[in-house]
Image 1: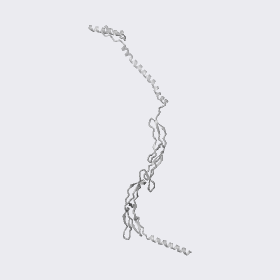
Image 2: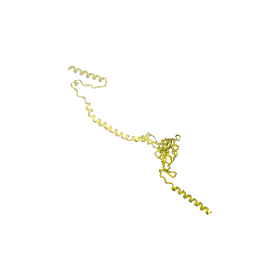
Image 3: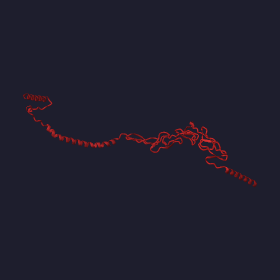
Image 4: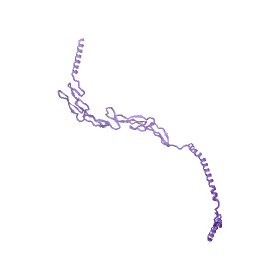
Length: 277
């Protein structure tokens, strides 16, 4: 029994030794080479694939990738990778065309974003509802980020682009009827008429000024009347009679029939004097 165990252990040790010798004989290739048949062969450049590995004195034979395929890195592979196809049914559009050296770049259409890291399908951006606003707009990779409206702001729409709007300020001649909330704006209305008490308070200064104005008017009237009295008395004196008027005394004029007769007599007197001259 012990002999069998010793024999199995010896066999395992010999096998490990042989494997170590095999790996030790294989060369260590550089990053620009690949191992083929225990030889380090040069890799093919981007846009190419290996047509034949190196052997003996010949180096690696490379050939361009076939149509619709690409190779982005230096490679020791004998095949290229098919170009990616952007599926319109999944919401993907071609953002950059492919070539033999790079793959096609697909991107979600406007208003949608990738559903996963691989971006095989697209999802519409989330709409922020009432009381919320867009904190960060979505793009072709990330979804919309919503946040509650802060104090002094509101949102009453559901949108994937609208941000919270500030409350309105009532203009001059308006009063605030209702406060704003996260979902409603401030409500303003025209200022109501002032109460009678307020109107009386505005009339009080006017009532106080009226007696002063009346007193000033009375003083001005008395001063004006006093200045005109002597002139009026001088005007009331009868004018000095002329030579002709001495012979024809003036008859007082009255708005009666007698007054009209006196006026006619005075006129006849003046005519007679002129004839004598």
